[in-house]
Image 1 (tube, rainbow, N blue to C red):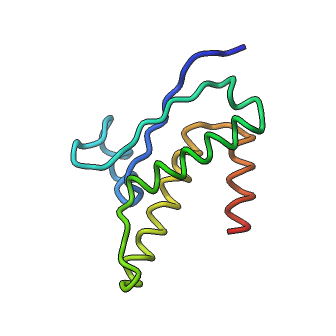
Image 2: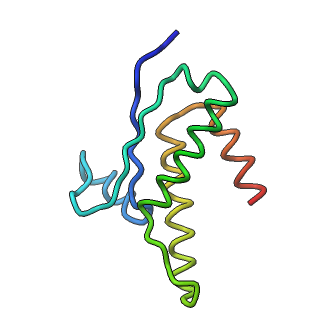
Length: 108
């Protein structure tokens, strides 16, 4: 079994693309959250669900909350979180996690 700890970096959604294309490490002023997980934890539904929940919470941390009175800001917040989650799922590169993400994206 692979017990090696792995990391994913959740970046502010809207800025992650330019950073990934142009720099090896994120700028210090870009909000980010590093999550550790083990490949072994992704062998169970419980582990996959837990990592997914942690990714969603991290996206909520890096994408600024907006006022319910500013619809445009709410849309940017939602898009930022969607992008941050999608990038994290892609970084992990696990079929079970990707399937869970696809199912949740369809329903929500």
